[in-house]
Length: 67
Image: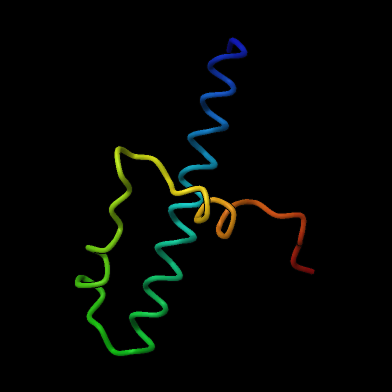
């Protein structure tokens, strides 16, 4: 793999991880208030596939680890 392909793969993996974390939190919140899961799933709508920088900071990787 070239450096460009590796960097693209890393970026795509990070994007997918952020999206999964955000969707998990959305689904948990929806369950707590009693919304059906299929209704809550419609709220993921990034503009042109880009994640908001604030969302990236909140749901992105951190230095904290579970023990």
